[in-house]
Image (tube, rainbow, N blue to C red; front, side, top):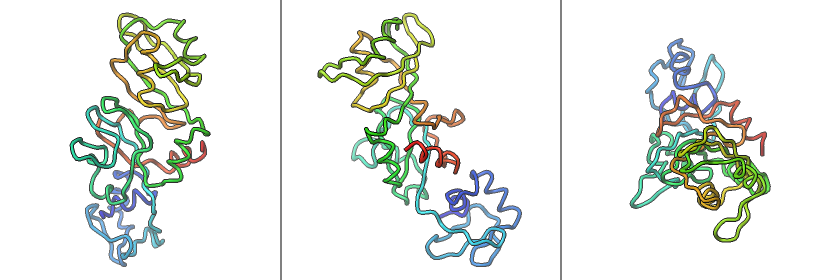
Length: 237
């Protein structure tokens, strides 16, 4: 594993911040000063110190990805590109998995981690963790739709959704909306709009619990969650 990745995972900031730290000569591997961010180490074997303090290696990895279209939310697939395929090998070695799913053509916020307990709590129906989406809709979204979503809509299989908050950003032949739901049925957002006679043409998840999608991340890019973001997620569950 690269030393910059090791330190980023251990809470010493972003890769950029870690590189600055390395240049100061504050980091040592086995008592040897290391300034090259690409220096490799074996976390379970090598000793790392920062300013003379031993760095305890963290077991878990927490990533935020701006999932691109055409990629599936799975750990492996024989035919499709998965979100794990987009990760660097240093991150893949932690064996992270996506927390929940985004459809193949849906983009936006996806959390990946190997912390099974946190993932379970975020996805537990008992926790009602809200998820917010931005969408473009074919057709005029109306105040009546807002009320129907607030009351729960009946899907094609007879399931009645839990109350959802629909906000109209613009209305016309192609409306723009934000929708917050607290459950995660298969293709739920798309099915909810079908239930009111409309079709989703573009869908992006922008928020999960208190965590907002980092707007600086291009589709397909990802980064480590900050310690503050990790604590925010844990506090909601």
